[in-house]
Image (cartoon, rainbow over all chains, first blue to last red; front, side):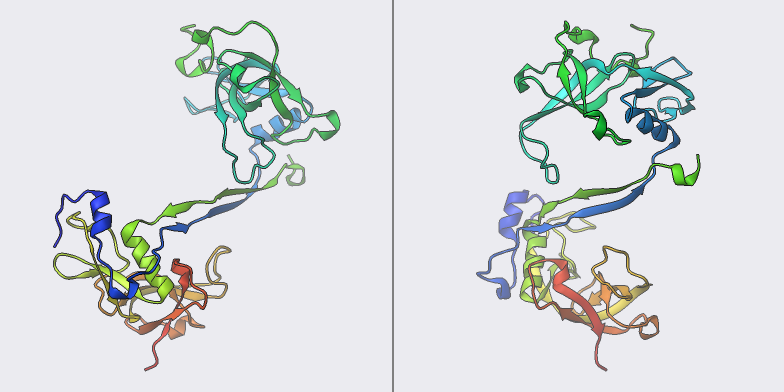
Length: 192
Length: 148
């Protein structure tokens, strides 16, 4: 009936449909939206983090295993499954660990004007990145190792949400060398 | 921390996917739009409904699409009450595996009856079509017991 080695394109041409469909415009796509509705209650660690964030403080958690600092705090060191109870205050300055320039608008994010830059911001004192937008300079100027500082919302607009930092802007300080920029926590802190 | 002091928020995660259907599923959906049900024939002559591009046992490409009946047999079923918020149906109904006349496999769809007492394994049901059809599985409103 059929050759098992027919490539996909040839298969499309080989499909035989009943006479009833002859000459009709075929269906080529189908919408399959997925929608998940949550009543979101942050964890204990995130509750404390969000309350501090509303006061322009950024909290991290320090691992009892090797001192690595995670932000936002999750109450555990995910590498070891170890509970963390040591909270540290982090600076609102850091550097770009890596980044992405987006040129296509995202459905549901009409507030983001393209092109925009999303980046993992490596806060001073933290060992993993913290997701944010980079602005205040041309897109093509954004680079790995670039030093940045937070641009906070006006005080009266601050709240216990993830949206208190409008974006991260260049601070003008010398870059972190590329070889030392970005995510170092996963390699451990002892190898420098 | 007291329950009333906890932060909480509504959170909706939404993906507006559009999938390409390919020649076989596309033809199946075209059939739904036109009010007919299509399967695909295997080398041994048996018919898969819904159709697949490849034979699930031998993996060979399948190309011969055939029309099957608009009525069939309930092979197995479960009662859904109440329907989930995103269910295609707003009222309690059966979800059933239905083997259409001329088909050798069963297809999942709703059986629109008022009570599970109206459901039996092996009962015959017939397709109920939506008035407005676009090429989607919801072009079938569901199935109802065939008048005996």
